[in-house]
Image 1 (cartoon, rainbow, N blue to C red):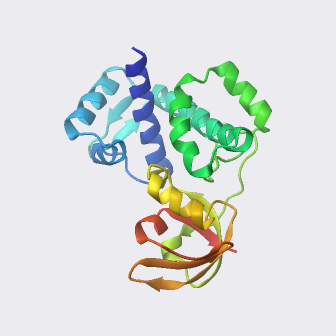
Image 2: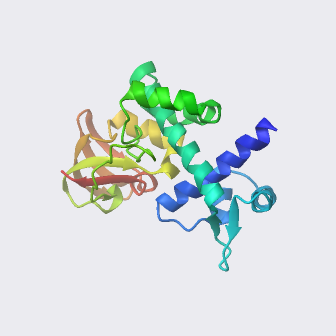
Length: 219
């Protein structure tokens, strides 16, 4: 039963995160993100429908019901609080906190969540710059755009997409280059390999697939 509960939470979390990023929640997107077969995803979505967590729109996209949205929001909140704990208190490397928080999020109770908020000072965003649902401290609105679209000049890293957080290699590259939220960098130009960036630790080329999921603002 615990495994089924975790699967439910994982699917609802992914649907909510797709919504956050302005991507239509389709079963095909879940296949990509969860690295599962279309048949496995369809079976689970059918179960989520039966249990009242999601509905299918006419265009076959997925819509969270109030019940599903409530659970999804709780899971995302606990995941991002766990990321902050792992980075800010425990000292786990930035590029590793997402994977580890995936394990923690399902075990955090309401009481522990409350203590985490108290311990961490009710943080506004996770270490990747994404807002923590339910925080009483609202993150300021930042006019951010993909690094892949940046013109030459100074930029500040605003956030990393949830899609990129699933890429260990992509996160490791950003960590090595110190391209993490809050960091300043200089866009030098681009070549066939990607966007050329100068950071505090030197020059690097960010591949297009990573640059498209790394959001920056004009410094």
